[in-house]
Image (cartoon, rainbow, N blue to C red; front, side, top):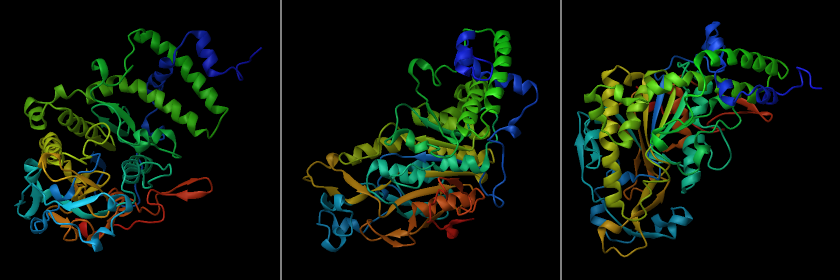
Length: 474
């Protein structure tokens, strides 16, 4: 006969007729008894030194936007338009791109100077251009492998192949969260998944509580977070059930000290209960004044960016907004109409986000990051240049663009430059490891000291690489 110590929690709950949803409610009693966030694995922690940024909103243009069509003007290419790329330049490309390279194609979009800084921005982003003096545009980004899954993993996790914790997980591990009732790391997408899927927000070997929470904001049947609410149980009954559940949780955990997986599961289930009310409020953009909603636009991207602001306002530490499922910016063909459409979808919401954060006094300690996993070549792929609407560009990782705003970076500046062909870095190269080191620095961390011991060694986001880009710090 099973005694109280070897009776499994699952068996006990099944025999008593309780579902896993009851476990999710276990924090209600705890909160009544005074247990707060200070006792949780996500309690607020101080970084290594005073931080400029407290939180991050990462705008991920998955698929790889073309840098020379958005934020890295190359007017000299107009004289070379239609010509073959010199062999000396071609051989510097990665092999896959080298075999597919076609003629040089000057950008079909016009660039102009904006703001007091005179920062040059493409006509694709007229509303974002109004905030030119807030932007720090890094035009000399470099990554590892010119393909989507490795590129996404590199940009998010610091390694193109091996399983590593994502930057959002590292930030949450280092800082904790200021919200008791919402996940500290949230990933927003209208629907579907990006390339590399949930590996982009994994906690890997970090405890599971630091993993990103993926939410499809165009949820099926109008339900953004499935099974968030329980309609099958009265509040009073749930209160009684959680007393037993809490006792079982504590007894089970006491017999397994140091089991981080168990602790993470218990914490996640408790968080699920608290989210029943908090998430309903945070994701309900209809509670915003109509002028605010209109500024973002009633579109998937607009709603997501407004949700992102509402989440960081409520203490969420890291919010990542993907433009869409898969790799929408991946314009191997039809770049002109594709980039026009995608930029139109994101231009107004991004501008609204920057303005909204500034108006609320939040931009100075909120780091906004824009970019994809790679850029694109200044040449067309091997297709006949007959219909401009069918021309596309290939992947490129040896000189692309990411910009940041707020959170302690200098605004109204471009850092680094690519060569005359927009393909190689001519000055101030910034590797993804350097970007990560700089982001962590803005959040108050020495990237070499934010470590976690696993499998006999100390791991960090930047591995054994990375330098802070000090010239862009305000």
